Image (cartoon, rainbow, N blue to C red; front, side):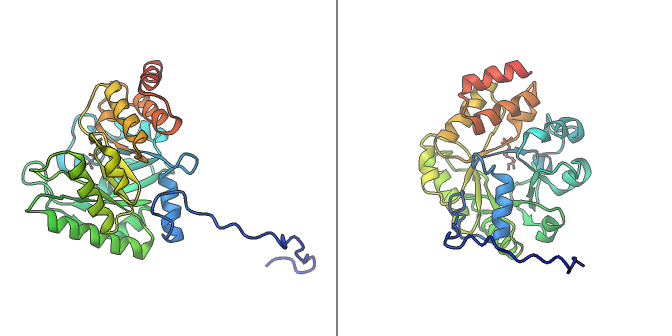
Length: 289
Ligand code: R5P
């Protein structure tokens, strides 16, 4: 119990100084709960408003793919350079040190593998995200795929209901439907559908006319990296996406399949957060590797 014999009366009330109401810095997020904002602020750096998410959830559908054979050797050394780690619960629990103190975006749908038909997923219990202190949960929507579109959009809705209950943001992951063109019209539709159904972040792909995707999506958008590219092209992808309004990247293969993953994630971070051009990013990559 506090000492009672030296109770000092407060005198510094700032009388006449109005309390400043601060708008939250992320697009479309001002009306979210305190817990949601706190979690988003762990993902998107408050000083830049952007994020570098390191994606290594690939194994949940494709097993030990190139660059992810050993998470302890391939991913753990990169943790310090990422703002947020995106993975599935089994790999995070088994292989990511719990004292990493990084935001976790927990891949929260699971189902079929690359051996059968993708995207027949169900959503895992949000309580597991709570137990893992996740800053967001990621759930995929397969827009344009007649077989799985309705189920996966329902998954987003279920995840949003659960996320709202516990203050955990949902990242809608746009999986490209089998017959869809990878263009701005398609990604605008898919991103907007995720946001309209309540996703607080959307992960999609960069494309020509990307600024339309950004303009029509009311919440922060991050881009996936996609298949491995030469480093300069991957850095150009990041640079263009950021310049056209993405608030970050959720990048996997272009980092962990690089010849020098630690150098690559630092170069990506410098483009995303520090405004380096792709060429400057490549020079940094070459210096660090
Ligand atoms: C896609 O559903 C996976 O969730 C990956 O996290 C995502 O594609 C990002 O990884 P990459 O940069 O390798 O495309």
